[in-house]
Length: 151
Image (cartoon, rainbow, N blue to C red; front, side, top):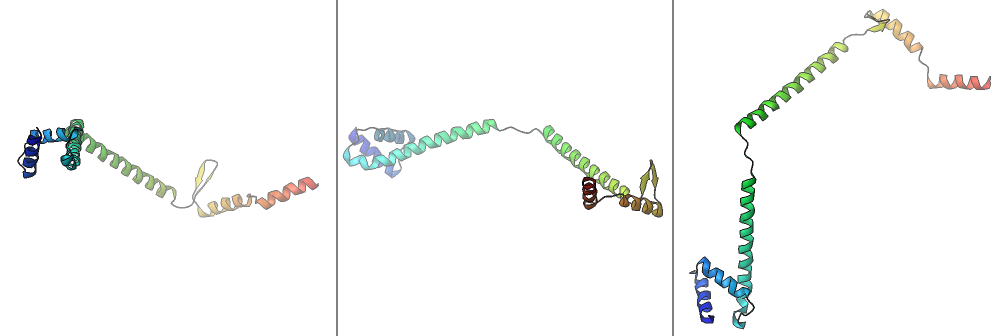
């Protein structure tokens, strides 16, 4: 067997081995009974063995990934496109109507008194002045409280 292994090693380095021959070499160098003069080749075949195992595992992972791929049917894709367009249209409509509401609300000055709307600038100014006159500042409130305490 020892001479057969040496011939097989020579064929391996000449590039004339089959995958079965290479597997035999990996198995041989995986054993603990390797002659001292061939021990320097053991790490090479151990590396190749580990690489083969790693490639096998990688190929299995790739096969599992391919089987897990979910294909999107054209009908489902069309529904997604239609739903996206509908959402964009709804958002656009809401934005346009909100902008128009703000424009309608912010046109001109007006005042509401007893449920009636007045747009006349003089009437609006009169009620605005009256309302501002009724506002109490913090200082006025503090003065009133101090007067109440000291009376």
